[in-house]
Structures are given as structure tokens and as C-alpha cells.
Image (tube, rainbow, N blue to C red):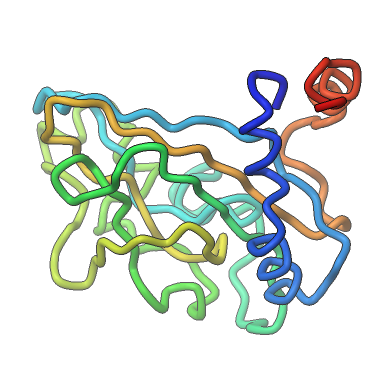
Length: 198
């Protein structure tokens, strides 16, 4: 947030804040981690690629072992514990690694199937060479989704363009959820920065 007033302004953009409060059914929300940038360079055909997962606080498909989950698998549709808000810095297209989603997966109350290549399995050494890329068949959708449920299954695509693509990622959670990382230091740094006054 201290890098530019633009980052702070995006983090407090009122329309998406209102939407997230409505979706999570609470006005008391906070960042689950400081805004971070996801930059995807051109794929070399060998590097590991991101597997299917859900975002914080669920982390289905990437927390612990293949069967491990930070939030237990459940069918409590009305309980929403997180929203992911992404600001696309670059244009997101299939060719440059736009995010792939499984639409409707946020209602399943569970993580993506291991056979799709979830985040736990795709980061194992030799996964791509042995099994190829994670699933990108007809059940995967490439859409523009700047705000979405943290439960939805998704993964970064493969950047086949010559240019990097970037997005600013923000996990937003109700106040009763502990942040993924301690956000007090970035907050204090921001309060004491010249940007806080702008």
C-alpha cells in the first residue's frame, strides 16, 4: 500500500467493498493479506504451473497434503468466509495466462479433484513432465472475474505471449477470520507514510 496512492485507492474502491459486504453478509471486513502482485512470465514449456485451488481462507487444493484443508469441507452455502478481489493490471486473455475458473464450484463445499491437477500435486517435482498441464477442458471457463468467492476453483492459465501479465490480488475476509499473514506492520507503515495524507 505504501508503494503508490493508486494501490491504496484500489484497495478501498467503494463499489466492490459494498458488493463484498453484501455477499459475506457483514459490514465488518478486512484484508486477509496485504495486496500482492501476481506476475506471470512467458511459459517455457518446462516450468511448474499453478494447479487448481480455492483462495484464503479455504485453500482447498493447496493446504497441507492432497487431502488437507484449512477449512473443513462443508455444505453451509450461506456461510461465506472470503472473497478474492483482483485488479487486472494487464489485459487478461487465454493467450497470456488469464485465470481459469470452474463456474459454480463455490457451491460444492469442497476442493478441486486431484485428477484435475490441484495445487498440491502440480508443484511436485516432475509433475508437468509426467502428467502435462492441469485440466483445461470444457469444464474450465476463462472469464473476467475481478470479484469472486474465495471458494471457487481456479488456477492461473499458461502465458504463451511474449509479454508478462499481472494482477493485484486481495483476499478480503470477515473480521472474525484471522488474516493469512500479519497485516499490522503494513498498516502501521502506511499510517506513517506520506501516502496516508494524500
